[in-house]
Length: 334
Ligand code: PMP
Image (cartoon, rainbow, N blue to C red; front, side, top):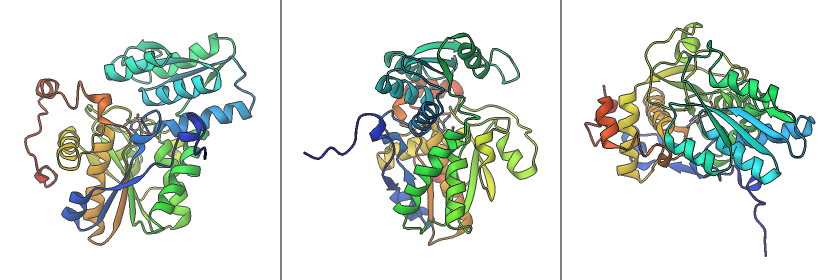
């Protein structure tokens, strides 16, 4: 018998790179999405969770029987809860109460102790980030993962996601685009790919309400509005985002996110979450900018099942005034 992977930790990464044929046909480029929703914990954040825990163990910051503490929009917590189970730790999660109920319930089912925090800005001490730090300070034997500033986060993508993309495209990619939360994925992936070929076009796509688009294009974090997307968008510079090597930035609207999520489900059988849908909007935009004949890559961060009661609920979308009005790609033209 050949053992191919060992437990949760041996199953993280090595995800397929999926072509999205109808978008390739529409743009004349090859549009490829890295299927991060196929990670064992269901999202791109499994990579960061595993690397942060392994780095903490190596640095002697996490001892047997200890507790992993993190503030998270959900996916990092899900990855951490599974790594914790696999390696014998407890897991404490602080999470804003406005995140999808699916993610909150899943975290509790996985054995994490979840403390919901008010959805307040970073400047407020009750923001989930500060709550997580305080929990770690107060608990004995606790390690605060601090995914925003922990360099092991971007390092996971520098050592795994970036090289996988390079190998899977045999170095033939012209552009890569994605949204950022902590900035770990974009930081590690763009740093790695630019080292392989500085001509690869590297772009951010930013949701409404985030300051990163303005930061990349003007240097200030000015931002307006809010977004239904979860896990992406931020109004400050993190150490992980600072590692990114970017050529430019796009913005995407909630209307485009909803239309693309439903388009991908109904035309391609791809059931992905809001950040993945925004990323694919970015891939189409970058393809249009680069012109036909190019290969453009993005990240399919997590699956649609985490947003069934929101992004894929007709009544929830109606409440937000966001029902998709088209079933084709015409929403991208505007
Ligand atoms: N999409 C989703 C669904 C996420 O949970 C996250 C992580 N917060 C991201 C995208 C962004 O990834 P990163 O933190 O590496 O920027």
